[in-house]
Length: 423
View (cartoon, rainbow, N blue to C red):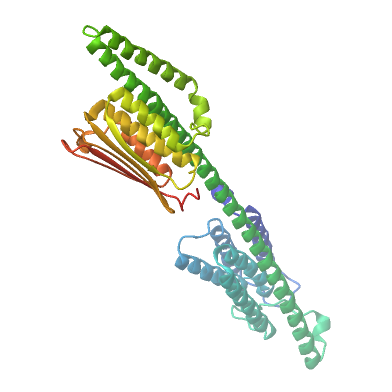
């Protein structure tokens, strides 16, 4: 039970309930004390005992409030009203105890229901109080002892009409005071509940924000790693592929034509130096536009010239740009073309390549097609180059299609929307 009340969402309100129930308990215990000088009928001991048991049950019900089922909440509320009435009827002077018990029920209603339910319970509690006030004024004795406190001798000497006015005045003042107290408790508890809900929502929002920030951080880290891997693969891999071709040519012509072999070896040496320089400048390349203020068309011409010189594969290139593109788009176009030419040099055995880049008012289109041996895409599941192309296209919300079959070459289509990127 200790753990139960410690887990109560509003310990302060629970303590307030206990204080109110303690007042009712003291009144019930006072009914057990005999009154030899009083001429009215004292309440029987069994009645006070039942009242004390009812107070204990009402207190235990508040240790764990139902929050899952509306039906159980309503049953809990009805039981609270029934116990409050029972205690008021079982204990002498019940008209003085009932307001305390109704405040306990109203506090619990604020914890269980929304504003409409709270107002309904408050009205019901107030009508219950008025009902018992009327019964007390009428001196109704349902259990054989009076509900209200016996009148003092000075009031019993008043004329009936004057006594009636005094009693109704007292009842009216009591009703008005209870109404103010009930409204105050309703507003106070509702404010406490609203403040707690705000804190809970704020805590939940902060937790979700932290989780979201961690996810974004992890995603950004992963994307940055992939971007660096693509840059290394696309730039250094291109140089190493070209160098490998030159070294193979050196081996072919070494015995028959040493001069030509030396020429290919010099090219391989230069490509190795270029690759080393590219590695050393990789950090700076990742932080700024690798084109270094040169146009995409000029950079493509250099790439095409280098490719034809190293592979002797003819390229029919057509580049139509209306304006300067953003650095991200230019980098993506260049790297995809570079990777495509690298794959053609390594695997395709092609003799011709067609390259088209076209810019319209709304999008940029890229086409790379070769007449090589082609490949089955289902067999190529581990190639980082093709995966890198897809990732670069996805980063700009682009659409890329790689079409290839054995004996029919390979074709790469890329479409990047300019309206979504505000280039």
